[in-house]
Image 1 (cartoon, rainbow, N blue to C red):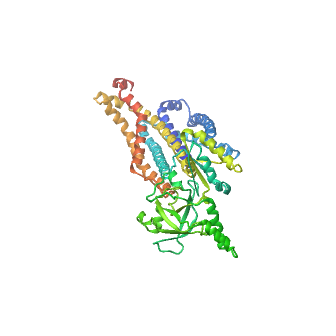
Image 2: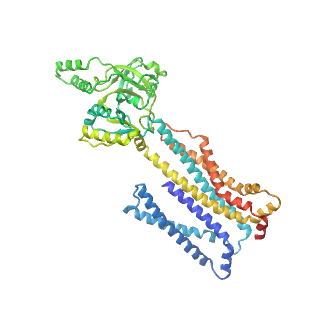
Image 3: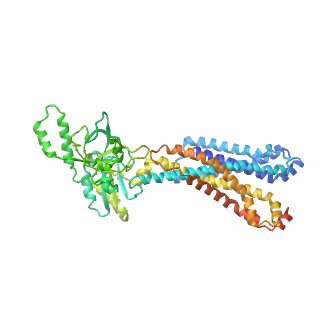
Length: 534
């Protein structure tokens, strides 16, 4: 909404600027009309009639373009509720344009206007500076938003991999059949690998449990987040250990997990069958859990050297104690940012448990994409016929999490383009007007020996000043706005100085390209013709 308002403001500034320039250019014909009996009210009627015609045509064209854009973007803007708002906005736009068209007429002394007053038209550059300021701010913000989106994608594991298929939020029955699904899919040539995890990419890990660790003083209420994965999770997502290994080795079967749950339940049940407990303990055997910690977990434990954690005894105080037995830390991984980047990485204790892995991730062969997707669908229907297959690609999973940021980037990019176009139109018209007034001056300079390059520098010097002033205003505004926006993220890109310099150079380059052709034509014109014309 704010972007649309700023674009509208730039358009109104442009309209006022161009209307004033046109007014000065037509001053002689307007004086003649008043000498022959026309009053200011008569001239006002002509101005309003012309502006009403142009603004009405513009509104209809805008509605047609909006209808096409909304259809291609799949956005419904012409609902029953919005029709009234569109009509009110359109009527308001037409009314404002009509009033602005009278601005030069009632702010200038038409009969007594002189060449000295025409020279004051340089003051019209102030609105143009405002336009450039807004355009510069938009360019800067667009660069920062795109940098942050790229930064986010580079932080997440395999976030740019379009060959990862994610099947999130699976029902319990499908989770229990994961090993069967994995076995079937791994026999298909177009399937490269398959793994599973507790949460989907970009999700939030919220399960917190107490823990005990060798060499770490136990503190009241100290806890750590638990994250369960399949045995090949780290290998498939190319996450390497910074100490120890990411290889869990032999992991418990689903039958072992079910027995562990039952045994933990029986231990807390009154009058439980001792024979059954003994049988389950025998089935579970002596299994020592293998835990992997992330770097944030080391900060929690105040361990600076990852190697110091390897081999330490570790236990989760889970409410089903037999499901996560005592074991040791076998590896330490970096903060791999599997979840979103809105908050800081949580300290994780990672263990292999199949029963909690509700998200499946399948890597397909990019050369056999269609075959792989068809194979996944058919295999799923065979194993999970009672549940429809709902999948998305890994790239889409993260885009879904940052949908607001992607939308802001697209809208701001469009806004920047529109702002630049409007500013170019304004500077082109104002430049043409100024060059027309300076034809005699340029002719005299050339007769006195001025070179074409010197004349062009003279003509473009004012433009450089406008851009410089706009840059000085836009830079702190854009910096504060982007600094505030980046506070939404725990991990963010830097607001480097070159971003603002690049935006300034882009704006200056666009402005110079807009007027240089006119300046060159004026500078290379025969001075005799210019003086004869004057």
